[in-house]
Length: 537
Image (cartoon, rainbow, N blue to C red; front, side, top):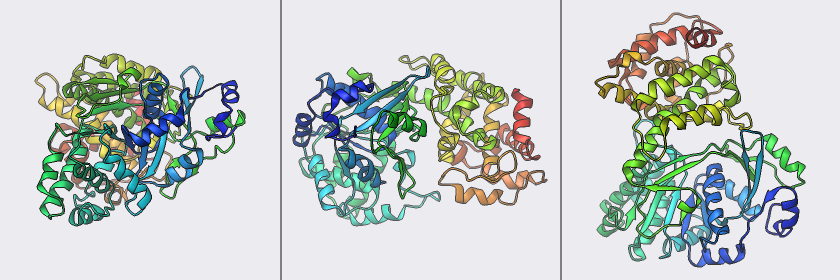
C-alpha cells in the first residue's frame, strides 16, 4: 500500500489493516475548494496535520462542509515539497492512547498545499487568487509564537521585515510581510471580509497577529505604498477580525516506534526526513488523544461549522480565561518545568520524568498549590479537572514520545507567560504572598543552570534553540560546577529582565531565592538531583 491518490483506491486493503479511510468524494470537494475556497491555514507542521486537518475531515465526512482545507507553508518549503506533494496531500494520524491503543487514520481533508513564496509566480499567484475569493472565510495560523515577532532579541526590526515595510506589498520576503500582502490583495478585491485566526499556543494570539498586520499596513501607508483605505480596512473589525483562541494538543516529532508499526502494515514510502531548516517531517504524525480548541466567535464572513467537530466558540473574555488557565497554570508551566529539569537530568521522554517522585511532586506543587489559587474559572472547563487530566493521564502517557528537549525550545519566550503572570497575580493579591512560592523560583534557577549547557553529571549538552541563547549563554560560559562566584553581579542583570521573567525579580523576594537555589544547583555533579530529592523527595 502507498500513501497517495492511487494507493488509496485500494480502500479495502487500508481498512483491513485497521485504518480509517476518508469517506467522502475527495475529487468533488477538491474542485469545490478550488472554485470556492473557504479555509486556508498557514503552517503545515504536525499540530495542523493532527488537529485542524482532522477536525475538517470530520465535517467533510458528515456532509457538513462542501469544501476541503488548503494549507500554505511560509517558513520551510521542504515540508510541502517532501511530504505533501509526493503523497497527494494525504497523511496518516496515529493517535496514541494512554492504554496503549493506537488509532490509525488516513487524513484526506487537505486538498491543496502551497508554498508561501513571493518569488514563485505559480504558487504565490494561486495564493493571491484565494485571497481575492469572496467565499474565503478564514485564514488560520500555527507558525509558533516567535513567528509573529517583527523584531530580534534586541528589539530591532528584522532585516526582511524592515525591507518589506519600506518596499510595500510587492515581492515581500518576510513571512508576515507576505501574509499582509495577501490581505492587501483582498482589500484591492473590494475590502472583502475575513477572519485571521491565530491558533498558536501563546497568550492573546489574535492581538499578536493583528499587531503585525497593522504594523505593516501603517508602514505601507506612511511610505505611500498603499492607500489610507488599506489601514482603515485592517483596523475595521467588521471587515477583518483577529479572534483570540486557545489550542491544546501534544504532537511530538515522528516517532520511530510508530514508523515501524506503520511499516509492519506494509505501507511503503513512510521515511522521515529532516529538512535543511532542521524540521522533522514524515508522512505520518503521532499525537495524543486529548485536544482542546476554544475560539472567539468573531467571523465577519461566516465560518466552517467546527463546533460540530468539538471546537468551542465563545466570547473573548472566556477565551482569555481558558487560555490563562492552560498557559499560565494548568499545563504549560508544568511542561516547561519538566523540560528544564529533564534536560539537566538526562531524560529523553517527558512521560518517564513523571516516574521520578521529586519531579512529580514539583509539578504538582506548581500546578495545584502555586498556580491554581490565581486561576479564574472560565466556566466551560474546570481548572482542577484540567490539571488532574494533565498530571494523571496526559503527561504520564508512556506511549507519547514527547521529549524535554523539544519542549525546552524557546524557553526564554515562554517564561514571562507561563510563570510571570502567576507572579503578577500574587503581587496584586491581598491574600497571597510571593514568599510562599517555592517551585517557580526553583524552575527559574534550574533554567539558569540549564543555560550553562552542562547536565547534572557534568557532561556538556546542546541547549534547544532559543532566540536569546547567543545573548545569555556567554554570561554563564565561565561558571564551573563546584566554583564560587559573586552571584549578585552575575545574575542580577538577567533577573532584572521583565521580558524574560515577566517582572523584575530583583525587586521581589524571588530574586534572592533564585540566586540561593542556583548556588545549590552548581555545587557539583549530582547537585540538581540532590536538591530536588532534598525538597521534594
